[in-house]
Image (cartoon, rainbow, N blue to C red; front, side, top):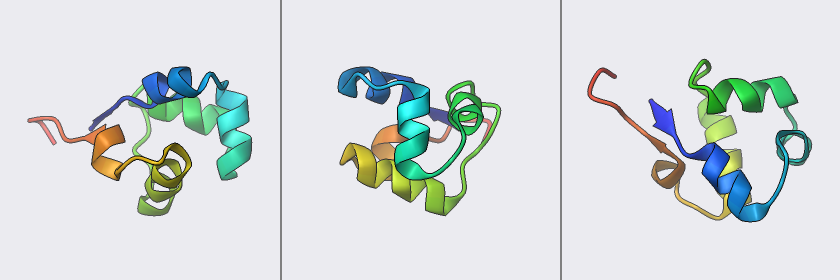
Length: 66
């Protein structure tokens, strides 16, 4: 799965730390998601979706290998 979380953060001009605080996770979790090392839970994906005001599939998308 790929994501554009870093782009969404840049649009809002917030740091990984600020985003993590807003949705209740660690900065390391946000970093791991952005680096595609961690696939977020459904709950976390929904929290990110709500925070950015975007549909989940506007932030996360499947790759052919998924």
